[in-house]
Image (cartoon, rainbow, N blue to C red; front, side, top):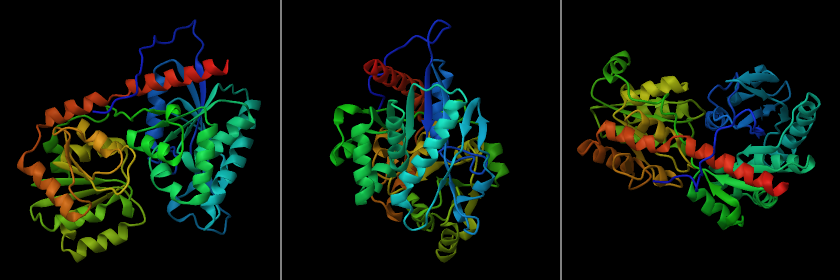
Length: 409
């Protein structure tokens, strides 16, 4: 089982200690229009702040398009307030220009302009920052490194998935990612597989720390399943597939596999541009009456879905550290998952579930049949998830931030 890199025990802050002040920067952060967007970044930050040794403010830029251009799948981002507060943490949402078609190459430059102006405003309002904590390497991390250099602040960039396992395939973003990796004071990856890829691209091994995500064991926990299943009208074997409705999440593999399981029902939680195509596929393979599209759900509602399900399937082609796997396990639900990137570091025991032998519907079917033939005890699955609490990650962050500030001094 993967754990954090050597987190040491630290005393909790008291009145005599100076708190570390960070600015967390990421476009992956929940807002009023997208309440589940980047919730994994918010969760890690909330756990860090709750420890009592760090205070934080968030800068979470949101895209801006000219009034005559539709926001499409981005949602009603025009309604997001410039300043807000979530769970006791202040959040600012500066706007950055999104340019269709050429946006990937321009994004870090547009982000930097928005972030630079916003940071000046925050400073003028009295904000004091010791360190910039950036999430997602491109474009967020690149712009955050530029911001840190402009204001002579240390910066740590966290890599989370497609920012390292997909975007560097493009030459210009790859060049900026490697430049940012060289200039950042340190880097964090959420799994060893992403660290290995960063090193392969050219980043310095000694400056990368693996700090995996944890799971909220209070929010996600076993509940009385039968009332929840009755509420959804479920009987028989139930499969959950959770994630944004895009091709790389592999929901289509699960729908195709369902055709060979006539006694099973599939619950799909999430929304996105592929919903209509997935609905058509369900009709084509004659399983439409056994597929429930639940839409985007908050974390409490997701907990109900995990508890209803007999298995969670994650058939993604790319993942950094998939939070849904641990969330399901924390509810006692075993998983079937694709053998990609950091996922084998999460599904590392029979109590957790199984890895698919192939990334297709046959792989999904084989994984589910393995679970059905020898289902793990749900209490043991929960105990496995309990090994992934957030405290080790919090300790690892504080240790890293403290080392950087000590070097700076």
